[in-house]
Length: 157
Image (cartoon, rainbow, N blue to C red):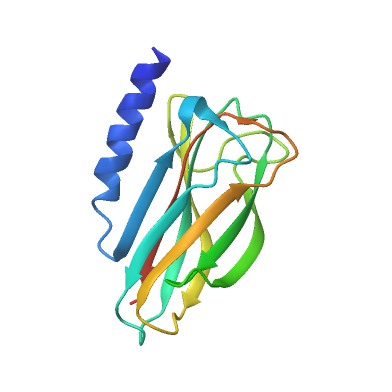
């Protein structure tokens, strides 16, 4: 039954992802078995052609209500096409209300999808390919009940 729910939600996620008009890029990496190991560092590579525009970048996280914490620490890395590190930062993402445990995000059944801001109004210095690399930075390894992580890059209007 749980596999059916995961499959239905994955299909719904992909359908909704296709409706994003401002998205320059949207990538999602499914976490095998919902268990995210520290050495599993998903990478998302996208191309920027308009350097006069600003861009907003978002995390896309899917977790179950059984996720044992209210937050998720992620270390993110932004690299240019030459592999040069442009930015390295740790972010705390709040997935559930710390007092009540009520999940944030959009959910169906026991799975919840979150879209959380990573960077706002970012201006890329040159056109080309860029990569965002994500690493879970929690004390628990592996980290259970995280089913997918991703990145959306949107051109600001």
